[in-house]
Image (cartoon, rainbow, N blue to C red; front, side, top):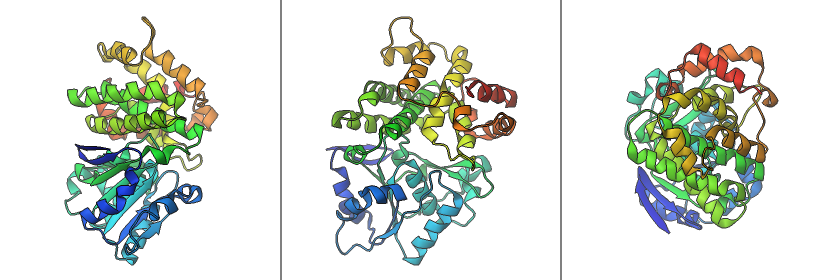
Length: 373
């Protein structure tokens, strides 16, 4: 069992989830709200986790996390938290459940509405100490939200925004690769590509943070080596580590890939998966940025184990094809008429500020158009 203290306390290995009762006791939590989603319930993971808890612990379950967490769902979770007089939060699931749990955690100790805490609304300074304790238990190897300082929420006005503060990092992360063994191949691929996007965008961000870049490169190497064989236990361990490292590293900042995927993920008509979106738009963004990152593309190629002279973008496009990721946004239902509005939202997204090449509205229109097919 590896106990890692970097940003927060992390228990990482097969069986880590068995420490939940002990960690809640250490945080003084006696009445936790357990936030999860219907898929986790149907698969039996909720029961598995609850069976590990002491009989006397008063657990309240909120299991209605939508595919892309919404402000309305956060308010529903908050109502459950208050009705049971909860004193802590447990997030169990993929990034959506963990982010929704973070949203509940904020509003349990801060005034509504949630949108005022979004980064682009100046919300970082509004998030105060004193939030209830949180334990995060990821069941996918992708977002790394268990060690992330933010939550991405579709607000009541339809915008998909990031609420960010170092105070939002969960107090404890229980990273148990066992919980990912039953993940369907398509979701395994999509979440793994999310981890790859985090590692690549962090590494290319122009901000100065060599430790974050080193972690990002290690995460990328693990993900590239294990994503396509992620059916065995060792590969699942490596993928969960890669996802966690991607989120550890992206404290350095992301870029245009995420600036594009955030408004796409907010489209109510489609309910698109975040990791899949990142994979689809990443080739276009990397081509756009290639001349503005020095020797970093060559360093990525080396870490990815590419042959001499091979380029990163075609290699990632080939990986998408092998994993049956959609060829473009049009295949996912995105319409050409939506692109100008999506571009406006991408420019406003906080991830644009750390893209290595400045991007304006017309740049984003061109990037969305290139990613259509």
